[in-house]
Image (tube, rainbow over the protein chains, first blue to last red):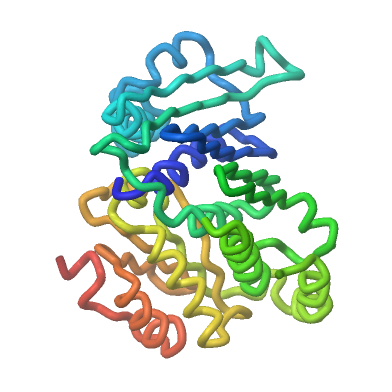
Length: 184
Length: 121
């Protein structure tokens, strides 16, 4: 992947597939460290699947036997000296509190750090593809914070769907302006 | 600065259109957005379809959706076009530039752009 934002787009699809109705994407930057956290309230993973999920030969896809999403994300983190951490609660054992969190730490001053890239495009594509999910995005930088919660937008929009072209482009501009505002 | 008031204005404008949109789409454009697709450039392809459908004022007729792995990863980005009563068309190795052509000729004009389809690779 050429940008970490593409890994985020890919990793978030796992949350979509897990049937989550709320997905949080939280980026935190401090000094030379970038932390990416994707958490959802989907069905969660059972312990044996969780143990093997970082292995490329573990996948839920039915079209072939390899799944590279998590291994690629892990590689991108590890090549900067960072790593990923996964935790999950399966719905059978945690009926009221199930879901998955994946946290990746990157050292941004490392030569092999992949740039974040077009994160705005990732967020708008996720919302366009899954308008019924509540997306909560926040990006904390040393210059300030960017926030988006589609539940707040839905309150204003009523029955106008989030994947309406005008709404998606408004969301893109809204995020762009927040980044401009803090001079990121 | 963008405000929620602006979003409310969009709502006003769109509300009349929403009724028209429901169930009236007869063309469905499906972009593969699994790891293979994303790594190969599916994100700009999807964005280009969303934009072109709007530019060509096809929103009432065409919906753009996303799916997982279609199974032919070596041909990603892959786009499938479904139209009632017609055979599925599979476009392969798509780019934002090719999307413009497909939107104009196929989605608007009804003519499949054969050179970008899977049967031509």
